[in-house]
Image (cartoon, rainbow, N blue to C red; front, side, top):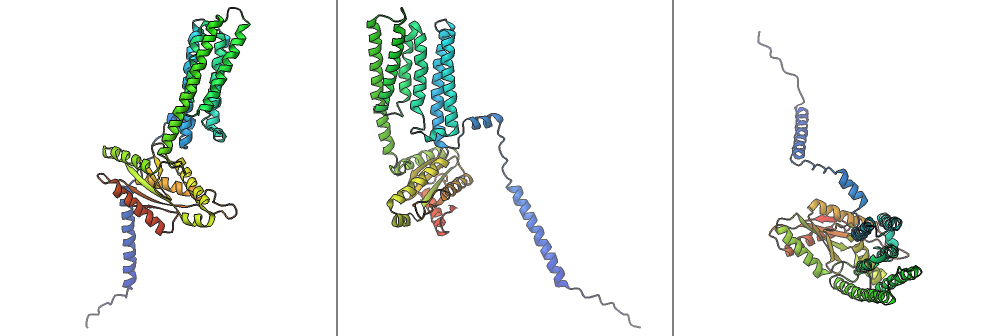
Length: 400
C-alpha cells in the first residue's frame, strides 16, 4: 500500500500576515514614541521657594507699568523711613518728645501702608496720575511739618527735608504743579510759625525767622522751575524716541534696542528672539470706519502688547501697521507663548466702532537670532514667518 500523506488544513495566510504586520507597526510606533519621550523629556518645573512666592505676591510683576510705579513707591517709602530714623535719633537724645515722635511715626507708617494697598489693589489706575506723586508728597509734607513744630532748635536742620520731598516730584510734575506743592510747603511752615508765636521762647528773632522763610521759599521756587525744566527735557527726549500715536518706541529707537541686545547675545548672553506683530486688515478699518478708528486699533494693539511684556522686553512701531517685539533672554517656545498671549488678548478686546464693532486681530511672525547673523537677516526671517501667518488666514502665530 502506498503511503498516504496528510494534507494540512488550509489556513488564511493573508489574514495572519496582516495581523502580524499590524502588530509589528504598533510595536514600532510605541517604541518610537518611547524613544522620543526619552530623548526629549519635559523640563522639570523649577521649585519656587516660599520667599520668592511671597515677594511675587507682595510685589507683583504681571503689569509692567505697575511694576515701575511700585519701584517709585519703594523709593518714597525708603526715603520716609530714613527721615523717620533721623527723628528717632532726635528722640533718643531727648530733643524730640516721645508723644510727637510716636504720632509722626504713625503718620509715616500708615501712609506707607495706605499707598501700598492702593497700588497693590490697582485703585491707583483710576487716578489722573497713577503714580500718586502729589498725594505721596502731601503725606510726607504733613508728617515733616508736624515734626518741625516739636523739634525746637533742630527745626532749621530738618527744613532741608522739604527740598528732598520736592525732588521726588521732579521727574513726574511740571513747573505749575511743583509751584503749587512749594506753595503748600510754605503755607504749612507759616502755620508752624504762627502756632509757635504764641509760645514764648520757641521762636528766634523776627529777622532770623524772616531770613529762614525767604531762604526756604527761594530754594523751593528754584526747585519748582528747575524741576519743571528737567521734566520738560525728559518729555521731549521721550517724544523724540517714541511714536506719538501709540506711545511705544519708534522704528529707530527699537532698532537701537535690538542692536544692543544683539551685542549682549554675541557676548554670551541668553537667547534672543524677535516678533513682528501686524494688524490684520487695517486698511479695511480705515476705509469703512475712518482713520480715527484705525488709530484706535493701533493704540489698542500697542497698549495690550506692552502690558504683556516683561521689563527686559521692548516694543516699537516698526512700520505703518507693524510692531517689533524684542524678546530678550527668551527661547522660541517662550516667544511663541508671549505672542499667543498678546494675540488672544487683542482678539478678546473691545471692537472698533459704535454700532457694528469690528474686531481687532493681529498676525505674528517669530524667529530666533542666530549667532553671527546680521539683524537684517533675522528680521527678514521674521517677516517670512509673518507672511506665512497672513497666508494661513491671519490671526495666528508662525515661527521661522
